[in-house]
Length: 382
Ligand SMILES: Cc1ncc(COP(=O)(O)O)c(C=O)c1O
Image 1 (cartoon, rainbow, N blue to C red):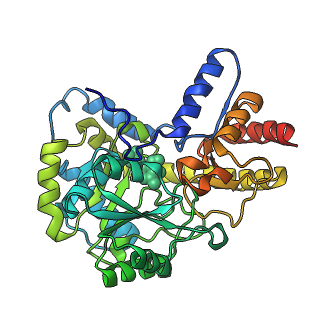
Image 2 (spheres, rainbow, N blue to C red; image 1 turned 45 degrees about the vertical axis):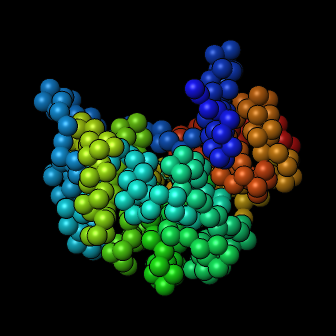
């Protein structure tokens, strides 16, 4: 018997509904500027493709549940080189994107039904995954005026209202692009330690910082679960490959869960990821294009009348206020799509209460797409 009506708060990802609608309009002849999804427009580095083509005939089986040792050694080298921390390859698990990492982390670290805190606004799959797996949620509201930054004081205040066992948080963040610096992250890590809250640090947008270096939670603590992915910085969304670094006490449980839930991450994707780690120059070229797009989009949106607030520091999103135009973000996105040919993600995806006043724009695509989108929106909204 199907149950589509269970009232547990599971919600569709409205950006995907916009994408579906955009595809239908395109099939009817309209051209659409796609700014709704957080996907790099470029393929992975050429050497990644070459290595996979070569490996294809042999790479048909499962790997060790934790992943290929070559990949885990490459990741340990990455932490030594980029973050100055020694990570044991035994503590690393290759996962099916960071999305699978979340499932392993929740089940490895928390009792069934435990309450986990997430920020609002935040990445919608956090909430939906927790709901789908039967965990409770505590929301920590963030403020535009504070650049959407999460602070130790925010965590403490939320915990005072309703205690929680874990905190899942990303820096840089989706949808706001807000990023904490070393002192900000230390404040979060210290607060979690004081409150006995297990921190899960989603570092998927690491590398995509426009002001300073990305600081990993591993530089500050070994108690946090660190989750990362090849999807964004390495342009490999569809390869479904990521990784996690577990605290000692949780490694074995995570390994057993991986053996049973997923067996192993896809073998070819692990080979691709191993090569991608050595292709940071290519990734930096993509980042330089995002950095230029970021300025173009921020200035262009502000000129049209969107509320930009403090310019975001990382990832590839602008979370813009639409108070001059609408108080219904989904209706606004539908209109923008149908009448201006620009696809965007409504704020209600990221914040069910305050998100009506916001829209998320992704600048992971090409400069030409952003220029055309700005021209179309300018004409339509002015
Ligand atoms: C903050 C954040 N975490 C995790 C993910 C999931 O990424 P993946 O499963 O492709 O690694 C996304 C995707 O957009 C994201 O924005």
